[in-house]
Length: 169
Image (cartoon, rainbow, N blue to C red; front, side):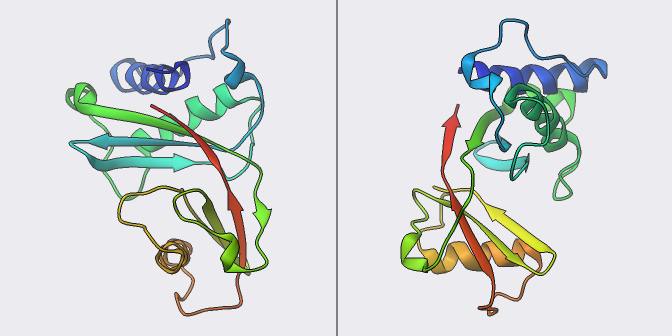
């Protein structure tokens, strides 16, 4: 298990069991020191159990982003009930560290296996990570992302951004 994933797992375990918000490790891995948007995903039995993240960095480093987003994924994802202590052993974790988003001028620049997308329309924004099971076409990726943002899936006047991730297990 990669150090970033261990940090997410430890953050969730300590919070669920003891209501303690951990601090970043003193001997941070190099990947934890920079600043980037981070998503933490939880799965149980192969099914999504929570996923929360930040589009761009809002905390002082990746380690702090991981801790905060891990706790949010476990306790604040509105699609799921909070994770219980008896579930912890069944959960698998992944951490996605995002590159800075780039504006897309034509959808031919997209590839759902390689790039995640952000769509923006007015003050609504939605994000979908890349390389998700069942999301095989750009049209499907954009439709899902618009729906997540509360944007009509048929709306064409949206700003589109792409980004890549380093996914850690």
